[in-house]
Length: 234
Image (tube, rainbow, N blue to C red; front, side, top):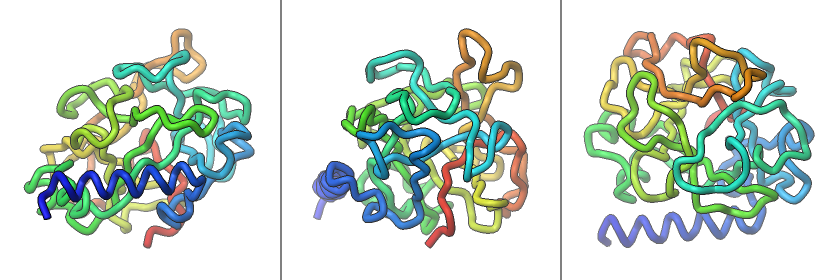
């Protein structure tokens, strides 16, 4: 089976699960907290992604959101006060699997697969009111310090793939989310918040990828990192 045909089957299966509202079927590692950051139509299909600086996994204060309305490629990703009324905060899992599965689907490089292989990775799709947009959280170019995080086409490249860092790095449900376009394996580029600014600033600062200052054993977590409520990873 060619990588491209496998890619099509994987993405079609993930889309069918999400359309059915089966977030737990996509992966039991993802838990929804709909009272804080998902509209009623999105319900338990939605997941929370938030900064550990601005809340805890049971009650995040600020969560991932798109800037304004619309799902166009390049729309900035920002933080927004957690609510259950703003569809711009609605995100679902487009596809979840090991890094090796993303490699077989032709979405990450062989070098990245060799390094992370069995770690879990996710595509996080913008789904206002539970309706899939076909756009996922990613970067427009290879991740580097200060690269802006925006909506990008799902299933097209490594730029929308987010790898959950090694299990040893988890501290109270928090784990670094490494961008799949990463080429810096000892200090990878992770989803992060700008060093200057606060989520209530207007306009709200756009999220970025930053170098994760840690050792290659993936044991140190920065206070600035974003994470999803992944619960206990399988």
